[in-house]
Image (tube, rainbow over all chains, first blue to last red):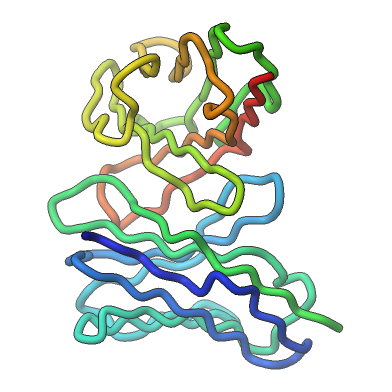
Length: 112
Length: 115
């Protein structure tokens, strides 16, 4: 069956460190992979998108990698800040489809 | 350009009543998606609509749930004869194109509580 797995346990890190979040998938052939941020009581907000033929994408303090052989994406936040504390969701869209499928998300807690 | 607008933000219904959730997509967006989120669960896709058409309703329960996106006006997710298990946050998203090469813009959600 198809699965998108993100760490269910919260990730606790100290301000200034790099946070690394993992998204693994099985039985998907995603043409695109997206990362979203969700704060409590609010809708998800788009962060980054990476295509299947791209290995890495950067945007300010954010970096996403995409390894279609390992079926894994890593999401990095460098120089993390308490304001980065939120739940981060990865989402896939298979080739030929028009809908995003989301993982359950990983909560990130950055302490000062 | 206002974002995706959902209303109401909170909705309380008694078992057996109907719930109507509204979603106005961003201006210029003709693709609308509805998702449901339960506590400690991820976003579950329900239905994808493009003006006046249901494109994919594979995530929608077969009974009691329906969705529409009329030519004029917001998209509506309708739940008839609600049960306690329908209590969840319902999110609507819109996009200008139907491919993964563009971001989805989400509303703030409607939190449905069935008592």
